[in-house]
Length: 252
Image (cartoon, rainbow, N blue to C red; front, side, top):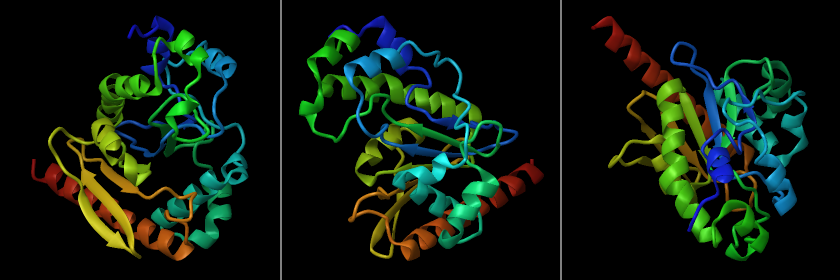
């Protein structure tokens, strides 16, 4: 397997990110990390994306209404509204007033584990032309490269910016999220809320890393009452971690 230099440059940069405010240690943001862009890339679209400059985090959406145009984004607005101290029923007002992931607004950044979008997770979605473009013989090779090369790069982003929360969507990808945002050899804490799994940890940078079920399928985190409970619990974790950090600084 010989990865193309163009793909390696693109795949190790801020590809697959919608962007917003990535934050800093002085002004930490909330990150939302999905799996990959939906819809699926054609070979032509992938080749076009690989020409983009991904050396800097993308600035985000031009219009806040994009947060309401897709079911995935609307669901994310619900849990972010709850985390922010509001309710899931106020998600449209939250999206308009706070404007997460929007160019020029602060506090939120949206990204994905994987840079290439597929219509679903089936391995036969890999196109022969993808091999010509990327150098990977199969989707399996591509996933392995991301785990070994891209995820550690994402971990350096998290070390540098130290977000106060990294909200990860998709519990079946918990091992991937562990490599990208948690610490070597450390486990997540497991809780059950409304018969749904919440996994969370505090990494070495003090970031709360919360892995929740996917929010766009019937077996995931879709009920507003459940989303509210998850949001409130995650908010408690952020507050508790912030309090511990303040006490640590005061005692230094």
